[in-house]
Amino acid sequence: MSAGLPTVAIIGRPNVGKSTLFNRILGQRRAIVDDQPGVTRDRNFALAEWTGREFFLVDTGGLEPDVDEPMPSAVRKQVEAAIEECDLLLFVVDGALGPHPMDARVAELLRRSDKPVVLAVNKLDALPNVVGHYDFWELGLGEPLPVSALTGKGSGDLLDVVVERLERGGVPEGAADMLHVAVIGKPNVGKSSFINRLLGEERLVVSETAGTTRDSIDTPMRYHGRTIIFVDTAGLRRQARIDPGLEYYSALRTERAIERADVCLLLIDATEPVHTQDLRIAEKAWKAGCGLVIAANKWDLVAKDTMTAVEYERSLRARAPSLESVPIVFTSALTGQRVQKVMEPVLDVAANRARRISTSDVNEAVAALTARVPPPHHRGMPVRFLYATQPAVAPPTFVLFVNYPKAVPEHYIRYLRRGLRRRWEFSGTPIRLRLRERSERRKKK
Image (tube, rainbow, N blue to C red; front, side, top):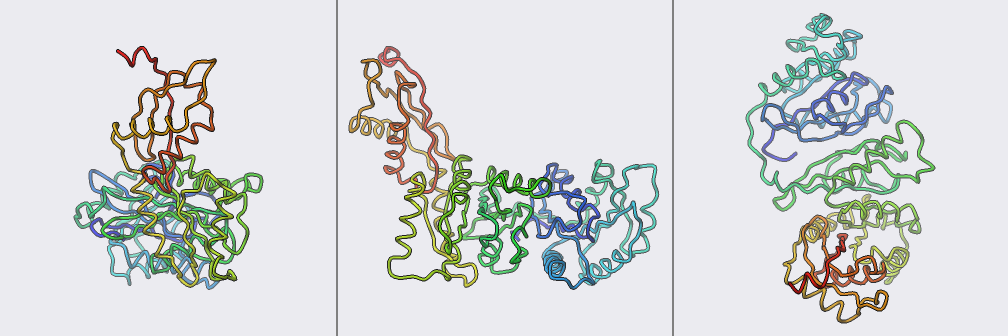
């Protein structure tokens, strides 16, 4: 976890409303909520705030202490790691059903952790006309606090207690400079394994079963003095193959994660030819204005000679000319081969995406490009680029004032975009060009 801010972990057995409470505290739908138990499997990190106090909030999978099946066991390891890392435990129980034997087992585990615990009795939707929370005194964890995560009743009182129990902490170093990196790709290309290898610990549940990751999971790390939030996303299938219900919402979360990312790290399976779906996912990131880095994963399984990487890269760029400037790293999440190497291109692409060019330099570049290859005439009249500027970054956006903007063909816009990219080495980031009409008479004034 990032140093400086305290961390609150939401703990409880399956289907007691942890993710609903997580969303309620954040004021937005960051975690998938479904009546089916076991929807949350990984630790989901987010920055929360209450009455001016900030803290990291961690949503965890349902804890089943006595179940030895593979998936519950993997989830249990994630929950135990969250307990170890956090500053305060928010223990959620089901007030509609009353105390459950598994609640007592979880309470015993939390007492052994020696961490402060706040007991939240959820699903009391009829507040304040209920007293069922009093039954949970028997857990021996202090006063049970009634709440309805669904309606929001009691959530303010609960957060008041949480904030009171937290130690005071300042803004973590680099918090204002957080970089969000969404790890995207098809199902089962190794996204969770890749992040675990990058972080050096098992932060995310990994299984050979495709679709293990259902939510978009935020995981912070520090790198060279900067806070980087890695977002593990559910694999994106072709639209026709997405099942209605839970998988649909997983895909929706992934697309939203792309929208709020600064850089997307696209993992592709190097043991297979580049699929059309890989290119569609890359295009989603590109259209969203994200920087993009490609990691050809599972490279340890590829039979190689001296030109294998070169040929693979040439084939990829031939299929997707729009990605000619995107950095490619050949990695193996299984062995760790070159996994750490992705960090430098990620930071370089983020810097390129935030680069601003002076107006005089932009005008000089556009003048040179249009002089080298003049735009086609419009009804016998010359098309002139009169003025250019860069009003925005992330991604770099250039506005070009033209006497006949509608007459500029798409291939010429691509030529200008490619020329601007090469002049300033905008590798890995999309560039947006906006054409605006401006008369030559106005220019002369």
